[in-house]
Image (cartoon, rainbow, N blue to C red; front, side, top):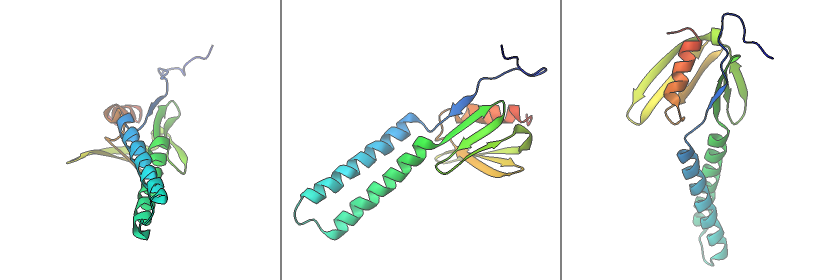
Amino acid sequence: MVQPPRGKEAHAPETFRPWIALRTVVMAADTLWIGVFLALVVMHGASQSAFLSAAFFVALFTACSLFYNRLAFTVSESGLTVRTLASQRTFAFDDILRVDVLPGMIGTSYAVRTRLGSLQFSSLLAGHQRLCNLIVRRAGLA
């Protein structure tokens, strides 16, 4: 049986991802634009600019879909792990210096300052307030 470290309470890892509704809408938009592009292929007389416009939106929504489906913030005993499209990086809680909460017109942004650089997340993440509270509490910033 695995015992938690002495003096510390063991916590199960928690993962925070973009809202499922956001991921679904982006994937639906991607599917729509793929359909438009295929319709232009079948349709005779479509202009080159129509093809380029549809291809642009297919590329845009495909990239957004890949990004949002890969993005994850995981809080575990080892620290805060941030998974993006291109990388995965873990920040020890001892390295987290400050968390700035920046309310805005379209949502809240969170800037996490660490000894290894800064990272950001926003209210586009489901449970963003809980994620902020966990980071602050585990990093001893409260």
